[in-house]
Image 1 (tube, rainbow, N blue to C red):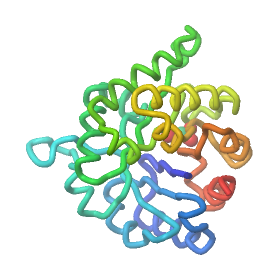
Image 2 (image 1 turned 90 degrees about the vertical axis):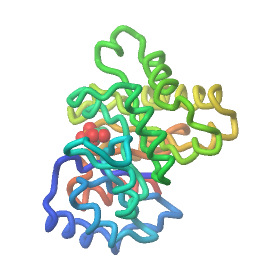
Image 3 (image 1 turned 90 degrees about the horizontal axis):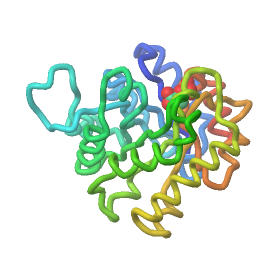
Image 4 (image 1 turned 135 degrees about the vertical axis):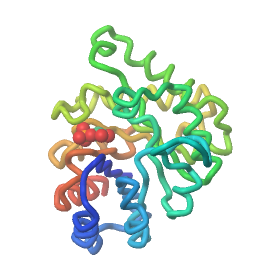
Length: 246
Ligand code: PEP
């Protein structure tokens, strides 16, 4: 699975030009599940280009369905655009916009209730890494963010391991470090759910993934793909990332 996180980038014309540039060359979703998570205002236009080789996702949503939440977008609204995925708990949302584990849990539950697949981001800060508490930080995030997510629903959640110190910094976790944490996440899912679910759930790596390191990362046994910001903004680079999964 290869997921683009465009963040707050691209006008409508730029987004459509991007889709036209890659569409012909994208493999079928049976081979690589390619997803573009775009700014909300572009979703309607992009969903029209959704097909058997490309899915569209949102980057955020609020957990309530309607109401006095100025500036927010609800799961009902997302559902009516036809998007399949929504990123939840990205570290930029946690750190810049004060999202707590409890809010993220409510978003995960609300997304699932509305047939949206949450791409749940977890990961440690540089301080936490240096203190040697990466695995316990991630375990706590998983327990809090997946609270009350049932066995029936959990396989609709994609988990992205995103070390905060690697996001947008050009610093990538080594393939073996990324593998270690993704393996720990799979182990946690086994304990929280069961072995069959742990085998099947998709776990992505995100943090300065680019064409030059993608193949090594996605070749790791517990890394099922990538969540990519900067290197997903140019069609050629994104295509290379998708093809690295083949
Ligand atoms: C991200 O924003 O999820 C991300 C991984 O960004 P970048 O690839 O730019 O580090």
